[in-house]
Length: 152
Image 1: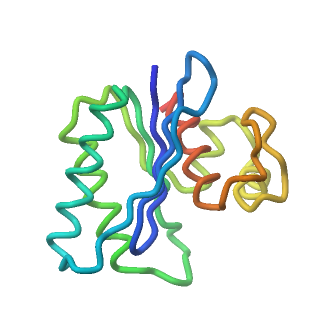
Image 2: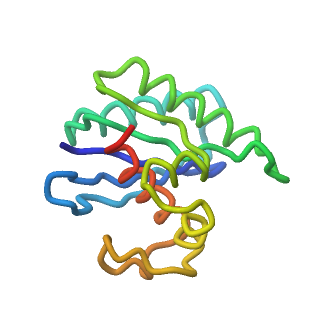
Image 3: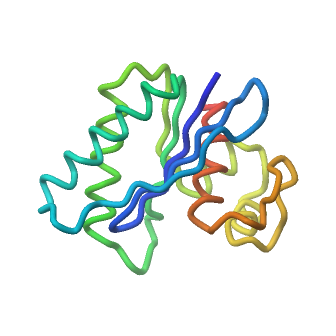
């Protein structure tokens, strides 16, 4: 069973495809929004790409790391992109998906919230994934979200 975890930034989307049966990462990639596109076109671009990725990797379950409700820096473009991806999940053939903040991701991974944050920040090494320290923060968040999708 393949899962996907997504972490949105204002102008890019990082995703990790995870093979739950083999307990390994299949792909880590970033989709960059072309600067020439206006807002509606960029959202359409991302939606089409996400749906293509779900089909290409035969994703069964998915998760998206969403903005924390107490975030000091709310970015409208990030929230718009998250909404479009959630809609793409809802209109796809996914069996299950979740929208997760740190608390729900840590619950699905069965780890303490404080440790989950430390894994994301790179303060702790997540031993279930090889070369954890080589990943960027957004890649780590997407990875944990993908693994959490197994239990969504």
